Structures are given as structure tokens and as C-alpha cells.
Length: 227
Image (cartoon, rainbow, N blue to C red):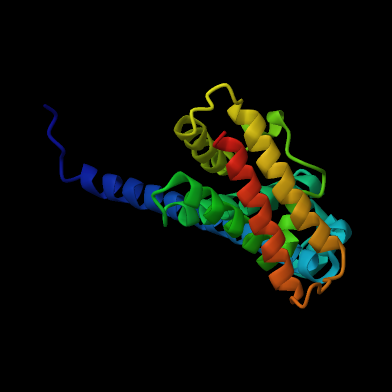
């Protein structure tokens, strides 16, 4: 082993200080970069809420955070990259809500009913997120593999319907087809209500009417799985 002389100690101390200073600079730069990244998303979301996601632009974001346009491009390749991040966040929130609703019940039929109601509530409580998530149409099989949050959201529905198929002795039914049917019908009902003005009917409030229609859909879907 080599002995460290007293003369070497000042040099080692100096090198240690330089190393710590470099680490401090790197950490400070990373922290600053994260702050700018978060500011971009915060400002972008403000535009989405106030003007709609169609009116989002890199220039508006740059002006809002008081940085140049190239700074925004240094964090996000383009506007679509920012929207993709919000899309990911949206499906993460939705997936968490559905999972939470499912875990409140032990029976698969009750779980699916809770999932549908949670999906409905999410859509109307988070309209900006929902409209952005489906702004380009229903997610494709390709997007399922690229966005883990989307796959996790679908898995909550898939696992529940798969269990119902097994319990109903209808193994010949295609689980993925049933998932697509369930999702499409649910999204369709939500979309109609998001686009059309609320309508009261049969002495019911619009909310009561919508819940009745949603319940009717869920009941019919569950019957189809139990044949």
C-alpha cells in the first residue's frame, strides 16, 4: 500500500473541492432545466384551459415563460411532443381512477360498473384532458405499445372483462373485441354529451338522464357477457 504524505493532503483537498464544485454546478443545471421544463408544461396547460388545445403554440409558451422559442424547442421537439406529454398524463390519471374504482369491489360485474362510472366522471371533471386525449381519434394498437400509461389503463378494463367472460362460461367470446366494444360505447356516450347541450327528459335532470342511459348500457353489456 502507498502511504499518503502530509504534502499530498492539500492537493487531495483541493481536488475534492473542485469535484464537489463540479457536482454542484451539474446539479444546479439539472435543477434549472427541470424548472424550465415544468414551466413550459404549466404555461402550455394554461393555454389549453383558457383557449383550447387547438390554439396551443410554441410562441405562446415562450412568451408566457419569458424565454426564447429555441429554449422551448430545447425541451420539446415540437407542439405535438408537448401534447403527447399531456396525453400520457391524462391516461395515467384515468387509469389510476379506474383502478381505484375497481378495487372498491370484489365482484367482477360490480367492478366493471364502477369502472364505467369512474370513466364517465373523469371525462366530465377533466374535459380539457379528455378532449386532448381523444383529439386525434381513438388510440391505436401502435400507441398502446408506445405509451405504458395507456396500456395500463386498458389492462384495468381488459382484466375485468376477461374475468366476467370466465365466470359466464363464455370463453368463446373474444376479450379484446369486448374491451373495444365497451370502450367505444362508453366513449361514444361521453362524446355525445360533451358536444351536445344537456337535455332534460321524462321529468329527469340532464345528469339523471345521462346516468340512466349509462346504467342501461352497463346492464345490457353485462347481460351479453353472461349468456
